[in-house]
Image 1: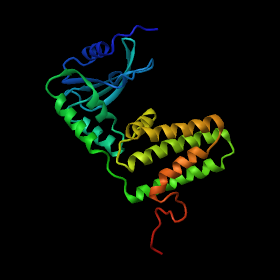
Image 2: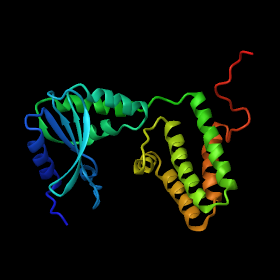
Image 3: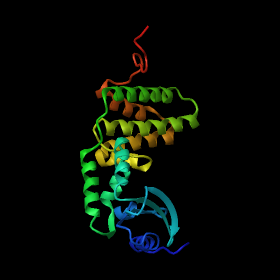
Image 4: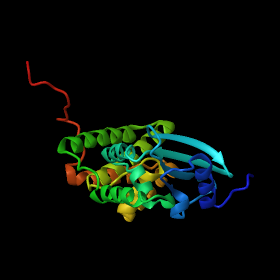
Length: 240
């Protein structure tokens, strides 16, 4: 096993080696939140006005896998906007929670921008988008109800879990996430709803019993009109 430096020490060493003279550097991710595991990496954000454009790169140094997010003093804004449009504010969240490694009086302004975006929340879903998401959830529910192939059912249940999390969060103007962040986002917004969904999934994975998961999704859809199939249409022209 490789010897690991302390996270902040490893991060500062990395920055000093690769980006001497950068305007600012932040350490973010699980090590900052106190959620690090044996496989956690260091998320390091660099702001360097000598860079022509943003880029991402991975390293292994000082015993750590390191994810580098390199920006100049304006390029990060495009990524802020992209993240907010997809309602997964990865970079704003990292900047907001990141601990300062280096600063030449630019970090606080960038952090304020990140916090302002996080506080506003994502754009609300349109009625058309909610209708479309209801349709896709209905389709997945029907697939699970009629499923006789266990392997296929595992993938359907995974699709349902991700989609219903997104539906709950976005219809309440909450940020969502991907992979583990999908669950974390729901747990942060409504811990009971997160536990109930995890329990329903666990019941299906252990016993092949679908009732709890189907009921959970149906109860989520109910305030919005329930399942949707008949009458759903997209792209149809009114011209004859």
